[in-house]
Length: 252
Image (tube, rainbow, N blue to C red; front, side):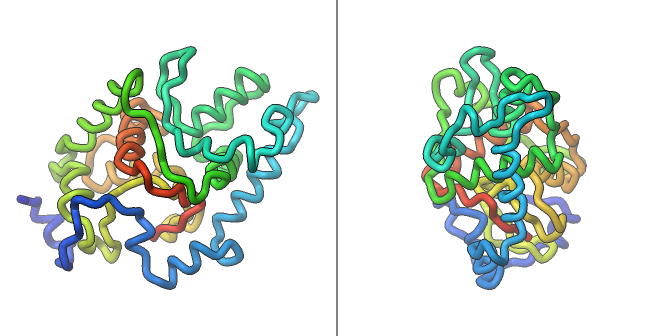
């Protein structure tokens, strides 16, 4: 594989990874960081989960319904829900990730203004709802109505972009296990998001991470919730089929 000179200078050669087996990003954490991730008393992302639990039960302004009013006993009723996102909304034909479904419920059913990506409320609710599926295998639909979105995400993943002329595939298939700026290149699956990243010192969404990748190769950064990143999110979720949800994960 030919790489641009700037990237070659940042890579540290390690033993090649098994490219035919997609594994979780947690596989590439240090043992200490993995222990911290798995301990709710040491993983700071659980603060967001706790805040999301409170938001889920809170009544909306003006006497509106709480999420809990429709989704009673969420530990049971929403167990496994996050494993099926992104998914195509049958009424609109649009591709929705978990954030998009939360916004849809808030605006259309609760008659409240949208939270918006990366707000504390959105990150907390998404982290909480995703955490209810922790340990369950990803199982998104990539056929039927979802297939065009999946194919668009695959094309995005494989397309060279930016001034460095790199694709997602070159790093997250061809260079898995190698070091880039002190971090280990993974398969790029999003099973732990929203996640607490040490470089952010806070919790962030998968789309924040995708925007950072776009910036890293000096390519166009699309908006949070853009069709391009939603399609890519579906493709990554399809690659992660069978891997457990790890939200709230920790990443470097």
